[in-house]
Image 1 (cartoon, rainbow, N blue to C red):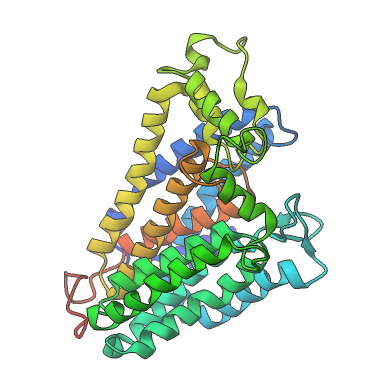
Image 2: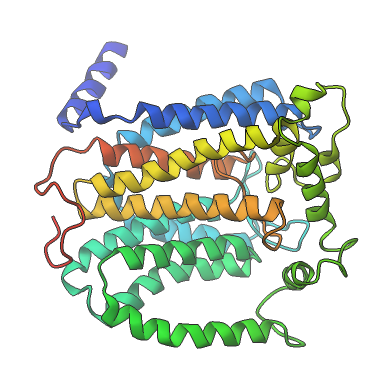
Length: 398
């Protein structure tokens, strides 16, 4: 029986005619290195059920399995089922707020689904589904990219699930999806004739919205979201209030100095990051900085930079337009989530609830990130499909 299963898997893999020599082992090594660093840092934190050795081993093995699985699933096949995946993802993000299995967080937000065995944050996987949906849509409309209808339909595809994420009070994930949409629109070949007039309208509208959220009785942002923005703009007045967590994070990061307390003081020294909340997820950069210092942070940033660079290199080398657009979406997602997370920890951005890819604790974030890496590898091992250039003219894509 086992031999038959192995033979079936072998026939399926060989039938795909993938270019296995292009399988990006170095990307897997970088991701695995970050996972091991995450496991080590989480083991140092005094957070219940987060740093156990068994849990971390299972996490690393699960990561490798997800990457391996999605790296051999043809992304064209995934996109063939995108209407179904899109509907499921939209229903799941809506269910967090409008169903009995949606759970309420400490900030009055509804971001998780409680399946009793595990809790799941569907907005993380929804980001991948939106990327695939937009890429498939642009391929479908490649002969009509220069029309305003293409722009508005693309926005509709992205903003329907984003609206449900926004009403969860998950502003940060909503912003990430909007940025992904903007980056994919700019890369799609849609042209200045469409984007120019749209920008001329959006700039004053954005200015009005910024003015509106600071008005009394505004309905756009929840109370804690507005407090985080006003606290960021007036840090001295909120030093013991909204900005207390971020101020402690900055002090903790600074105390790591050049080489970090783990090297200079060992395990016996005091740790400032213990006064910071959510250090296993949203503020994971704080213990990393204090333990490993500036030198360790630069090493980890270099690893994260390699992933982002490989995303956009995969877009450049993709065998078709669909692969190019997916890789751009994935690269945009990683780039801005990394920027937002570290920006919050270092207090250069208002406090948001975004995990740091590959380093923060969380099953939902892990699943989303590893799926993205697997899809990225699959883009790289695809056989040639005609033109060697994926950045062809918008009227003549492969």
